[in-house]
Image 1 (cartoon, rainbow over the protein chains, first blue to last red):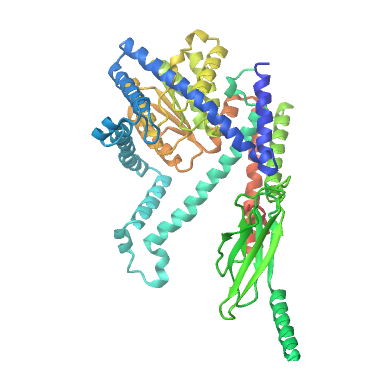
Image 2 (cartoon, rainbow over the protein chains, first blue to last red):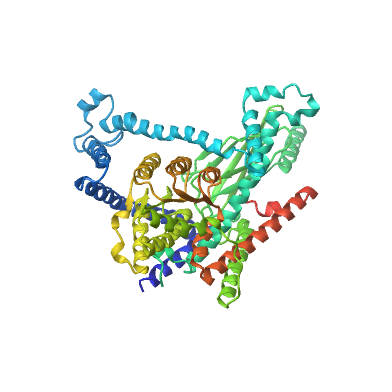
Length: 232
Length: 369
């Protein structure tokens, strides 16, 4: 029963959702929206579980003074400061327990929660995102090392696309006569991006879509049970 | 005098008839929909252009709903339309050259349909694919030998677990930033089940940081069950599956920290990934861990290919659980997917040939709008 009931619910709900894609009549046309709302409600409760997990894992590391426990302490302090600011003085649109915190807000310019969000959180987030630039450089360097025919091809294509997107690259082939414009670097770059790259990406998307159909069928028919923890 | 009046009236009537006979304004229920749209089409005599389309509201007042361009002859009204109610429309057209205007009336009762016929080809495709999957599952059950090509990324799982056991280092499993309503996350969790089983069998430590609370509870249950299945429930630590944050880059920062501090022997990045893909994979590469990644996001795959030892591309992520389980039922479904690929290749070839030849019905059949 422990296995049968979830499998039955999965099958019925899955079948209804698939049917709703093809039946525009009531009640099928509003089922998807209803289920999404259910998901949001359950997610809302699950957030509490997430916060509890966060507190439990971090506090045990701080109490036991495991290696680098200071980082976990910083994380917990940040967590509670943000929660307190939100609860006491509210966020941009909603007041908190102490109202809108006019005094603190006049001092900081905005509410404390907004202040921390704009001046700390966003900068930290941008810093992490900015790391991508350096990682792209190191990854590209490795990808373009000419080891095989494929990596040579990749490097040539990449150089053409990069040059085709720059003004200096455009000037390299600007002298070509009108009849030879198809060899103009920006045109070759556009061709590479529009056709071979697009075709490969679509092939991946089609195969992924087929994989999704197969996976969904396995789950709906109860063949795939790993998400329930496996077993019979 | 009477003769003149009669002549003028007859001329006016003739003029009105000639204008009216050429003008046309139709309101019709949009086919194959949920009864929440009315399609309006019109044909006006030369020199006239539609100026305004109005709908009569419940109080009987005409309310402007659109001001179409001169070139337009179609408008779809889907603003607060309810099925089985009668909606009346009027189109006001004018002719500047003639200094005249026309008012045309039409009405329609939208009805919710029980089947969206525009999606019939999709339903047929879905049925064919589903039947192929079911057929191959049944053949596999009957004992038929099925050939499934080797997927290196999945074969590496044993190697990764073995390596982690030998080095005494943990295995890091990242199920992506998708929530539980994302099939990629579910596919990742099915792989986690197999990985956790192997980790429990070989006594390797597993670290699973998640960024969605729903994924936390599911992943925790999956790992717990896997340890139980491996006969080592005592080795399961609840803290090995933990929540970091819902924030994309906060999650990345947290995992990067784990990778740099714990130095896992093997990293698995499976699920939905966006901009964080390369940050994770490159940090893992820097720590010297053996890395396996998989996603169905075509834009992130190149990053994984460059930085990881093995990459599951697109469908391989969804095939992973079936491939690893080696169960005939599941392997049969993979064969069904291959049949689906064969059909799609045939359709693409047929579509290309027909488009070149100037026949567009096959392409139109699969276009929804």
